[in-house]
Amino acid sequence: MKNARLIAFETLHKIFTEGAYSHIVLDNALQENDCDKSFVSALVYGVTERKITLDYYINKYLKSKTKPKVMTVLRLGAYQILFMDKVPDSAAINESVKLVKEIRQDYYASLVNAVLHKICDDNESVDDLSIKYSIPQELVNMWSKQYGEKITESFLPFVNNRPPVFAVANSLFVDSDELSYELLSEGIENEIINTDVVMITSAFDLKKSRAFNNGLFHIEDLSSYNCACAVKAKENDVVLDICSAPGGKAFTIAQKMNNKGHIYAFDLLHWNSTMKFLWQTEYCVMFLVRALA
Image: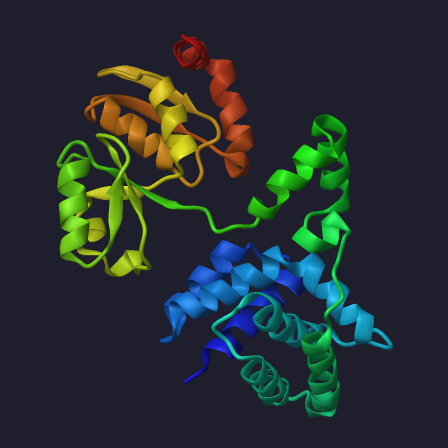
């Protein structure tokens, strides 16, 4: 059975070398392997989000360019050292050395050990905002120009924070009070936000949730939920959603319509079909008018 770090390595290697979508390749890896899903997810998303910072520290101590696989191992180790307080530095280094041997790159074991030890001992503070918060320099420059350096620096620490998870109750069956009770009965802690939405405040496995499998809620960002509500869709309306993936807004709109009406949902992969649909119908006018009302 593969260990969590190996699964994270394989997932990240596909992301960095094949351009794979992180959420898709991670979901596939978690389905195919019996592992600590929360730890693997934290490693994959953490390394992906903090890549700029990790590469800065790694390249300080690399004398020359190394193999992509070895670089991925170094990023995994550096992330555990710099950003995972619950993982001892010694464990992060030792497990990274084991990992580089496990992927048959034994020759680089000493390099991985040396670079990660130097990162452990590095106490230099970083003032560069792009490196400090792992934000592309182009974005930092744009935001600084628009909002000023002081305001930009005030919100950058929150850009890569893990966003809260919101569960939208299936109003055809339950409201947020009832959903909250169902989740609590499964040991999933939550807070009620409004009549439709609860915020999940504890770790949980979505696919193992009884409430989710019974169709009592779907996961949707609060901003997307508010967008769907702003449409003010009602029974027997026809709604066109041209930015639909992964589908949360369409679910919410369907519930607001009491499952009576039509929703045409499109996204980038179906752009040609979307444009053909727009040319052949007037549904887009209804959608835009209702959204702006």
